[in-house]
Length: 121
Length: 110
Image 1 (tube, rainbow over the protein chains, first blue to last red):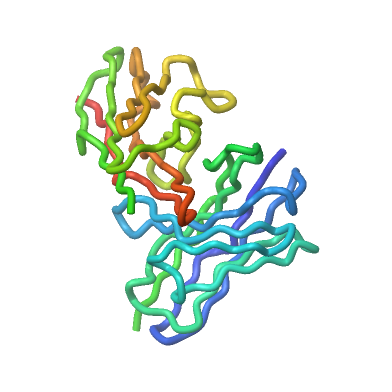
Image 2: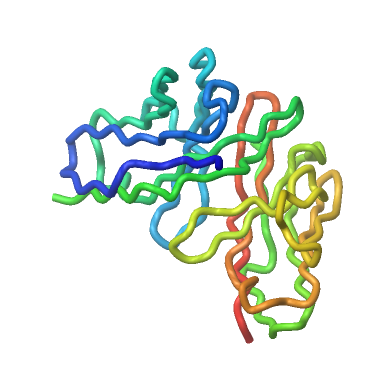
């Protein structure tokens, strides 16, 4: 069974750093792109970036370039989303999602359960 | 930058009725690169339709997608109580490589 399991909820202060994770199982983790998607409270979905675990090729949304870092440890089937200095506006639910692996697929067939990040002084 | 605009923002219907949700792109989208998702409160999104009209694995046949170019539609025939949720369309643009979502349509019980 394919699963993406994300790390638990976080409460942080502005200026603090944070790294959340997404661990895949039940499939060949290295062969599928993993995306990160933000959902602010009561709002829609925003694509942040995507990484290919096989070679760590990473693409960012222009809106998030320089604001976050996406990385992967393929030996432990885990992708990461990291902030060096959080802001209150980073408070949101963050989802990881697996991109379907066909030559033309550009959509996401499995999703993690989400990690709620709250940034407050 | 290609933007997806979904309409209506909210759709109020009764179980058993037919729902028609629209997704319009500001630039032409390859049909391979248009998908629809359903999201219920407290849950992650679920892939319903990919390649504009292909149902994802396990999706009931009351869900169908259509359209091409800049205009796409998600149709749900014979609404079931569990279909009331928020629906998002999503596109991929090749150059530069960007994924984006529409703002969502909330399907609520009338």
